[in-house]
Length: 69
Image (cartoon, rainbow, N blue to C red; front, side, top):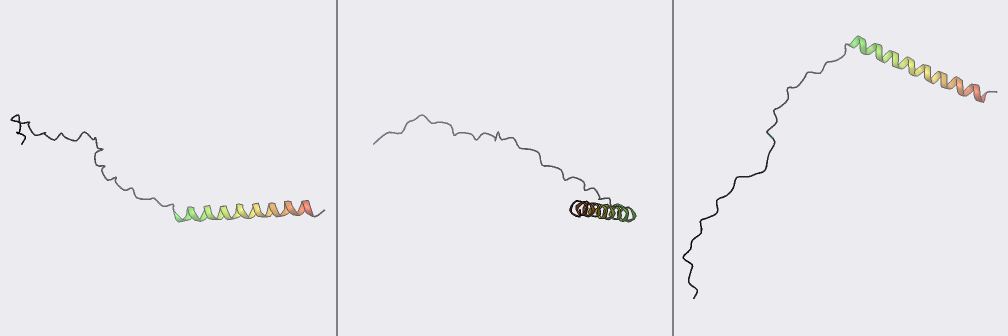
């Protein structure tokens, strides 16, 4: 049989991980949403509807002027 060697090696020590990790993010403070005043909303909607109606009317008159000779 083979004789065992008398030279004993020291066990390998585990090395610390070299992977760099980002720090744990801190939870952001939630900002409260600010709503427009309802009066301002009403004006914006009314102006939008009026502008849309004017655009449709201009398109209708433009098409009828071209085809209605």
